[in-house]
Image 1: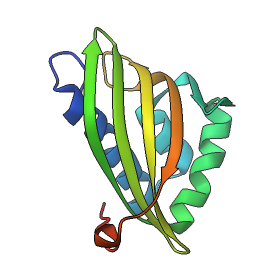
Image 2 (image 1 turned 90 degrees about the horizontal axis):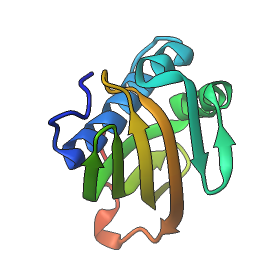
Image 3 (image 1 turned 45 degrees about the vertical axis):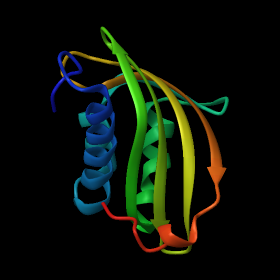
Length: 138
């Protein structure tokens, strides 16, 4: 994994989440190992006011491994300043039970080796467009 330095912010954030989800869903490593590869031990993620530390993030990933069948990140815009990145993207996902899309406003901090240290996200569900159905892939 590469750091943010000199990277295109849109590509960096799309690659980060795509790689993380692929390693998590398609691999057979323990989810804690995958989380640690992409996040620092002191990770703090706040999504819509809900705080997740490392332990909560690992617990959150276990159902994804079971039920996630596809995901695609459509990054609309992203800017970086040093080790921080702000991005607006839409996550299109499929699980064994449903598909949907979530618009995300993301503010994060990354280490030099590309791991996430901190993230704040505001999200909202968006309706799936008829033409979008079946187009989600990881």
